[in-house]
Length: 396
Image (cartoon, rainbow, N blue to C red; front, side):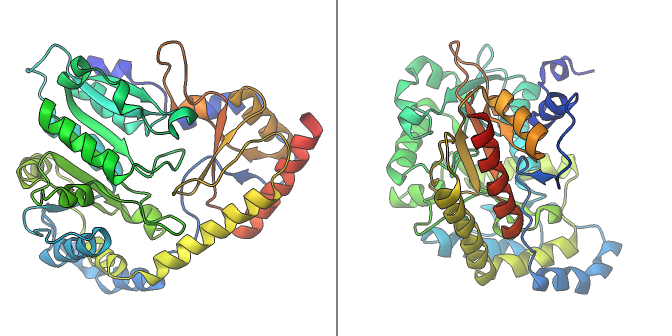
């Protein structure tokens, strides 16, 4: 067996299961705010596209995807991020959701021979795939704390030249999971210059980019274009229909950017055996070509944030995030204790922030926070607010 498998930590939801294992929750309807799985209705026209192309299951699909899907994605990128041109043939690749692509890109890009334990950097808290991908590639994951002091984004200025020089891949997540923090175009451009100076790849997880209030978050390719870098050198972005279009089960997303990196990634994926089924590709075309359902989705999330900010009271500190659909809430006691008591007394699941983070220099930047995913229907969210308020009144 690969010895690096033993280095993988339990997934956050396994930790949550263990936390609740000996707890008997109150006899109330369970409400799960712990998992970021959208519950809004998926678009009917996407379901129709799936059904109308179901006979394509009789054929193998190509890893590169059909030209119509790549062209649709390229056009969407150009429109959304004000890009002059995205080459659908060489700069776009459909993938089965960003999760498998984020993992696979490290296996394809990482070169263990350049340094003694080269680094893969990521924000902290973070999506655990970043860590697992680094470990199984033979890299050393390095975590950049995201604290309130820096608006829950990494303090990139504190990273030493020595660390940058040993870095092969930098993961960024903007809007961030769990905080919703957005990196500015100026910050992104600064990272691009660092990648040039120290020769590393930036992998930008942008799967929450379409869930925002008034201002669409900038993207990494957009920052490249603003610098006149239309080849997107050293830069890759990862997008998904899971959050944007409420289609987590479709397992559809894409990677786009540097054509040289994309060529090698396609080679890797050809051997990996992960082509997207044809009927999923046609359904994806329908989703990427429509924006009305995305706006409706955004409005639903903002309405739920409005409810939270106006009705949640007591010692739970909350704020409206820059983007995304999570409340990153500061708790009045240890996050795991808070989550366990809330589950026991109100049958509500939230995710302790410390489960999403790693300790750095004796501090866990997720400690003292819980993540609440505002994915439930409005009526269920209103019920959750009432129960959380009752819990806060009873305990603090």
